[in-house]
Image (tube, rainbow, N blue to C red):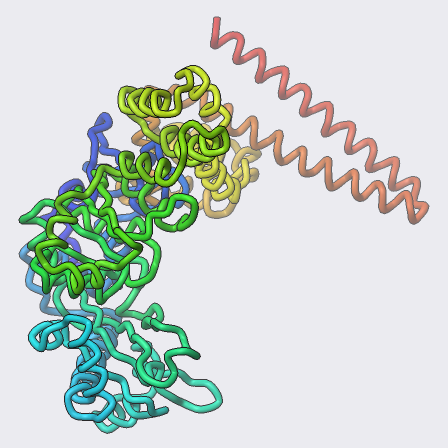
Amino acid sequence: MASEIEEIKSRLNIVDVIGSYIKLEKAGINYRARCPFHDEKTPSFFVSPSRQLWHCFGGCNDGGDIFKFVMRIEGIDFADALKILAQKAGVELKASSPEWEKAKTKRQTLLNLSEKATSFFIFQIEKSKTGKEAKEYLLRRGMTEETIKEWRIGYAPDAWQGLTDYLIGQGFKREDIIDAGLGIQSQKFFDRFRGRIMFPIFDLNSQVIGFTGRIFGNKADTEAKYLNTPNTLLYDKSQALFGMDKAKLEIRKKDFCVLVEGNVDCIMSHQSGVKNCIAVSGTALTHLHLGIIKRYSSNLVLAFDMDIAGNNATKKGIDMALKNGFNVKVISMFSEKDPADIILEKGNDNWMKIVSDAKPINQFYFDLAFKNRDPNSIEDKKKIVSELLPIIKKIDNTIEQSYWIENLSNKLMVKDEDIRLEMSKVANEQDEVIEREKVIADKKTRKDLLEEMILSLAFIDPKVVEKLNNEQFELLSNQTKDILLKLKEKPKEDIDVSSYILLKSDLLKGEDIDVPKEWGRCFSEIESLVKKEERGRIVQEIKNKEKSGSFDQVKELLEKFNKLTKNNEENNEKGNKGSEESNS
């Protein structure tokens, strides 16, 4: 197994693998990009071709090799990542570890179970009385017999254990039915989907991984209209895209992706001839969704509810798409109708024209802000400005931003300067992102960060470890001590350490850093931090002793406190003097 993994790594270049998912830019000997796993404006995601490692130095602070990256971006386990990368590398998998076999077997069991469930639902829509009524409903909505068969739409009977009894009869266990998201164990065991039209959700290889169930029949007024499979080993709503298996080639061919909100909208779009269409199935658009779409095209056409006064999830999704380099357009939906209703009432050709007439996102927002408002009214001017300025402020390109400011100035008949002044008061959402990332970074203490710097410096120049004295060594955590001891004994290439440390050392090396000087500064600061903690502990102990009347012990503690303070001041003076000499 280990040899197969190493062979895959030797045949694949990490830059090529990661570059097939996200756009990488050369940065010295490394490559960088905006992290695909969290929202950021400044690229903090680095890839090292020499080390065959990646690491994000921003909000998520994650990193690893090609296997870890594929697992994260695809949302899959190691067994599937191994299979994908082996195929890319042209490596035939022969021997397998017990862990790999277990993961592969469980996933395959759930895939088999989901396939059997799909067949059960199809049988019900074709043969059962209520199933036939559900099919008639779909036909009235404009779906053809061929479309219902192509998308494998079925019906879940309104029975507590209709599917469960069938699956157990097919040899599956209750545990597997729960793990596939199809059964629920409460006071009793029952089917998750009951009395619903069932839309299978497929992965990119057209394997069933989950379902969306639309309520049908007597319970339509009392239960949720749509119910989705919960997150499972197969299905993750943050990256599952309904219809992508059927749309991916057409998206690449047409070089744009039409994104709608509902499964029926997507299906009807395909039926109408617009086959480069997918749906997010009722969840918010995520970075992982965008990463999958970008494999096929960087052009995105949205058919969402686009009211800028509401729908923050949609706005956030658009912002993410723009930050990830997408060219975003918006379909102007009229009379608040869904794509499926438009196709049913206006016809296939009309839907194709609406798609082709999609507006650039900023033009759409501009038109929407002025819709049903009087630009001569002071109140409407204020509403228009409050809606548009946050959008205009996010435009990175200065020329484009100036164009929209001038356009707004002309339509509202106010000065450019006044609009810019108002825009300066608008809170920058990027500040919120930075603050969120700061909170994540703040989980590490200052001492943690200094020890990481010490390890990075040691990997640049292992000779500095020889100068480490016992007092300095005892200031460090056991994990850092262990790595530094290994550096004394064997080559740095043979030491297993995090991608963060290795890539950090590469980045510092590129800055031509003075390793001995930085090494000394880190230890000096750690010593100050440790002594500060010790003084704080002594102060608390003094307070406790004063309460108990142990004044001799208080005196002893005060002497210890003063000695620590004096030593710290002397160390600071030495540090300052050393800095002055270095600067001179």
